[in-house]
Image 1 (tube, rainbow, N blue to C red):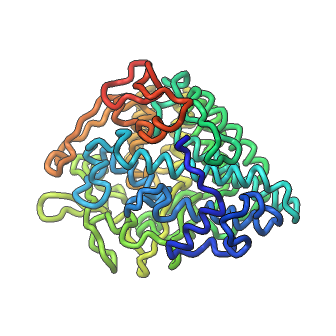
Image 2 (cartoon, rainbow, N blue to C red):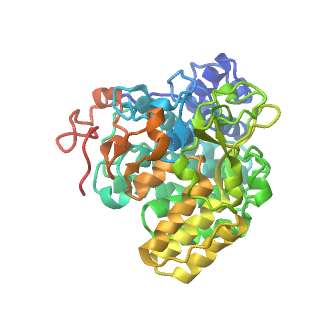
Image 3 (spheres, rainbow, N blue to C red):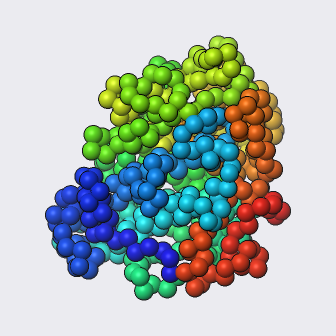
Length: 490
């Protein structure tokens, strides 16, 4: 099989060999790579160090094995999603190939393998923790919390794989999903078939709902990178949204609104680089030891505010800017440069060039709840939720009804959350076409793709198709490989 055996121990050793630190406690627990993986799980301290290694991998350079400067785990996934949408222009930087749809979703291009490897490395490491943590010596509650976080990681990873490697759930639940592994793998482990997308989502829900229970009472402190119960609930809100389970999507989004306030206007305009902002549910605090350096999103957004190197590569299309009313505070972040293109000041690095990166915040949850209410016909409540945000941002209230109200909420998502990594995920979820207009064409981003295009969906890596004997190496429906061209007609 091609699912790489990337053990907890191997992860820690590899990261230290690369000159990175953060897993060194784990390495010191058991520095020999010749011992069995489960030998580190003799104490709860060893299990915690293994978990720390997983967190390190989620935001580490080369975490997908691509050995490229756009291979930084979760932050890179979010930047890929943003580059593939309609509301930014990639004029330079590593993600220009995603922006231009130059074959990045093909099986023989590195991106497919990078995304596949990253998620399955994380899954395999989480599987080791889940399998062995109960046998550790130490406090039972600590072991419960470690297991809950590992289950959250695995559930999130399978959810992400499902969104990247198949059409959206509501039209494709009977289509092939991704191979499911719930035990640690070795080089001798037999490859698993793709199963169905429904089976993938069943595993996602099983992991996340169990994690939610196990993390009751867990306090992560200021470690915004880490999963706690609220992060799990936020991911569940996203999962139920993709599944069109609107009552559950509403329920879970509202759980977060009780816990986290909305982003104030002052916070919104401050540069999106501070993990201590009270509306942030999940994110990445860049440290001196582990940071993306000149390959962070702050280095890509063109606004010349960064005190260190910038690619000056990401801009804003004119047609997106025109969606904002003049009084909308978010409009004040746009500036027209060189009489030809807009920049945004939404993302500005801190003075140390280590600004925190947001993954999830309460404003997304408010919009999730508003959409869920609207799709259930609870329009008055949907509008009240939507107006909370619009009034705060000094935007014009939406008074539409029916599908027009849903479209208004989706538009507000774009305006509020642009640059935060939801663009292509929302496009696929809502079965929208890629319709780039205006000055996209001037910068090579004129690609137009219909809804449900297979170019939105990654093919399984060529190595997986070759080495996993449970897969038929042919294009679906004859085999297990996703098509690259054409449109899926459910």
